Every structure is written in structure tokens, then in C-alpha cells.
Image 1 (cartoon, helix red, strand yellow):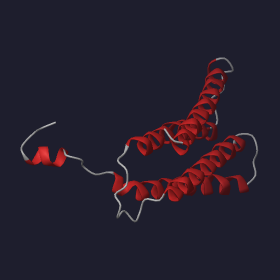
Image 2: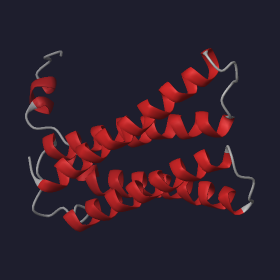
Image 3: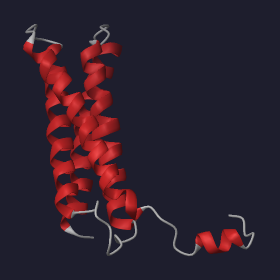
Length: 151
């Protein structure tokens, strides 16, 4: 497992921990404090867990397990995957912090940070998948399928 794969996975674990802490705090606030959490906190929790934890782990494992790029693959470049990592990590972090902040602070510019974070998350995912597209290919299975094998 090389360093960029480890970075994706460890970043995912960090976001997972942040999502767990926020989730437990919101649960305690609801069950013991009698107050429903702000929709901003719910959204921050969802993005920390679903994008920050789940997607980072999926992307890291896919980067590790998928086939090597073919020699003539013009899309795949490690620098593009690293760019996708940084776009996703910074966007998810900014969105998480900005959405949590919106639960307590009423300043309009936080909404712009949330929006920029969401756009950044989408852009990072599109860049990742566009770059990895050529690595999603058959290796022998298409030959077995042509012979009628079912799996």
C-alpha cells in the first residue's frame, strides 16, 4: 500500500472519528438535553460520515486494488489523483466546519463556504472518477463471459 492510498484511508478514518464525536454529541443533546440538533449539525455529521469517511475509504481502497493504468492511458496521472485528494479533503473539511459553525453563528458568508465546499466535493469526485476510468476494465472475465460463464 503506497502513501497516497494510506493518506486517503487515514483521512477517511479522521473524518469518521469527527462524525462519530458529532453524532454522539447530537444524540446526547437530543436524548438527555431534550433539544433536537440543528439541521446544520445533521448535515455536517452526514457529510463527515458519508463523504469524509465512506467515500475516502472507498476511493483509497479502489486506488490500491484497481488495475494499473495501461501504457497508453492518457487520463490517469498520480498528480491528478493527488489533486482530487486535496480538493476533496479541503472541501469536506471546510464544509464540515462551516456547517457546524452555522448552528451557532448567524453570518451569511458561512453559507458561501458551505456552497463552495459542496461544489469542491463534487469537483473532487468527478476528477477522481474521470482519472480512474481507464483502470476499470476487465482482465480475463470478459473472455469467460463470452464463453457463457456466469458469475
